[in-house]
Length: 94
View 1 (cartoon, rainbow, N blue to C red):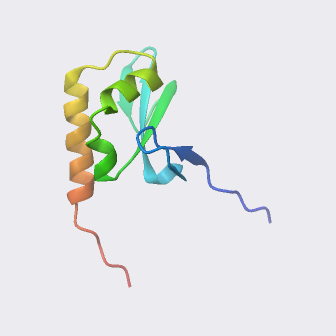
View 2 (cartoon, rainbow, N blue to C red; view 1 turned 45 degrees about the vertical axis):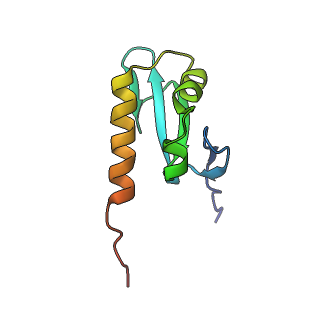
């Protein structure tokens, strides 16, 4: 049986390559606008580390990657979403 290799993507902030499942996908859909973890269109990926989402140049990097202008409300929403992901208690698996 053929094993599929994981789909690798690069974080736009730290430029580190990760498995696509470990990153957040930010998509600029031409009809629906900017979406998080869904949609088709121009996409950028960001890892869930605090260093990346507190980067002072994150807005500029996202605008360049998505080739569009971002609303300040979206950046506030994105940082809140990333903080809730990182502050969520980790479950211990047996």
